Image (tube, rainbow, N blue to C red):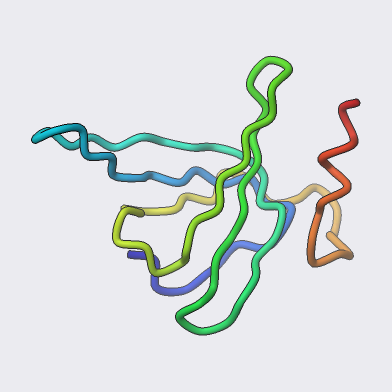
Length: 94
């Protein structure tokens, strides 16, 4: 469970998520760019986007999700991000 958000939109993060398959459980890592953070308090969630080949995948997680083991910040944005939501990155690769 993630307590405090220390990343901002534009950062590259790795989300370690617990996945239960039958009786076994494992940890899957999702690495991508934070597109935005929405909500406040217990209702806060964040969106992460990664590109695999030519296909883009976006995931949305609640901050207080019990399935999130940890979030690692891999890299900060190279320049200062001036927008709260980076939805323009969706059309960048077209």
